[in-house]
Length: 128
Image (cartoon, rainbow, N blue to C red):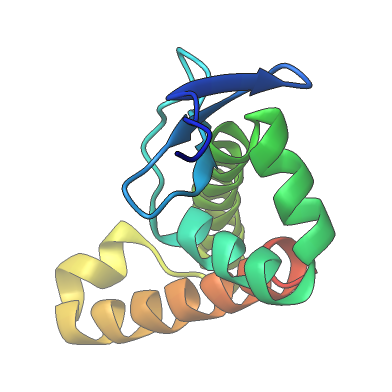
């Protein structure tokens, strides 16, 4: 008769569970209170880290800080885009008067500004 394996073992502070295939798998979970909503820019940053900064990604994941970090990045990107849009709008002279007089031109200009602001944020905050 073979040696019977324990269902659960603990080693170096990590709990391992025995599965049907005979392998032990770590019981790794996010710490309580770290379940944040991740938006478009957080997901873009996640993908960049996963591909280009693997060690930093893994370290934040193991420390339970990745989700919070990605949430913060997403919020910072949205705030920066809004700030850039307002600054560019003022610099280009886009006003509510233009919106009332020529709505299609206002929409065209605002779309260009928003796209430009998003490109700046992606270049300076996501892909660095």
